[in-house]
Image 1 (cartoon, rainbow, N blue to C red):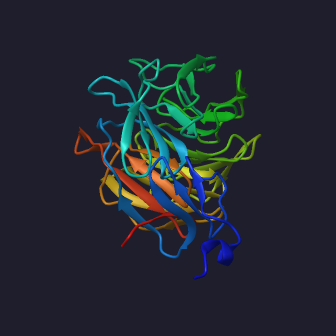
Image 2 (image 1 turned 90 degrees about the vertical axis):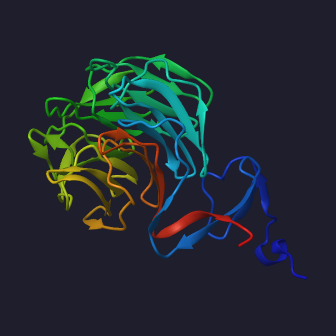
Length: 323
């Protein structure tokens, strides 16, 4: 009988976490989730239902680069904000160490083991920043300008935050120690979604009193540039993406009410793709345009704990079963 090694040249690896950069066709056994996984190719994009969070919330911050390893951080604003943090493993959420300062509507970015949160509403706009090392949250230097209903991009050591109340366009860059004010957005806004890195970010849609805006802007490390508008203007939406040329937005509120619409950005155009199953507002989001997670939010004025997983067209980690 031919073995896997004879066919593919390697054994099936036994790992405690999924590899950071698997190649197509690679297979491994994840001892943490007790699952056999591999990197295959997905021909049809779709959303699927994931495990509910332990605590329903909205205005929640997210961190993570796949739909199988993510954090849901703090959130809600009526009732009061909470400090709870939960970690997602691709099937269920587990409560972990709380943040030091509870908040809603801040910026979250990074991975599930090395993330950053900044700003947010603690009862008033905050400038506080915290970083996560996989075990604990540590307070670091504050933003220069306190703000809430913002978005972020990057890592725990190289990050960007932007937008804010009063249709602000203010943008700040973090170098691992200090925040520095850099060039503003061309069109200030709040209740936005963002994605990407500190040198390749995108700001998607948002709110400019009295309505949602369709404007999108990309960041190249120095300046913001307006690009093609989104098809449906929203605010209070989630975002995911690895760069300013590969990202997505989902759900949010339009002038007509809450929506479940999803759009993907390829660096040139916005394309409407498969919708999430529920309309929602102030939803959390993280991941990439190929492997994203949408969680929490508000539906009919009630906080929800729903989770949905996105797999886009292209290479994607898949879990094998007996079926």
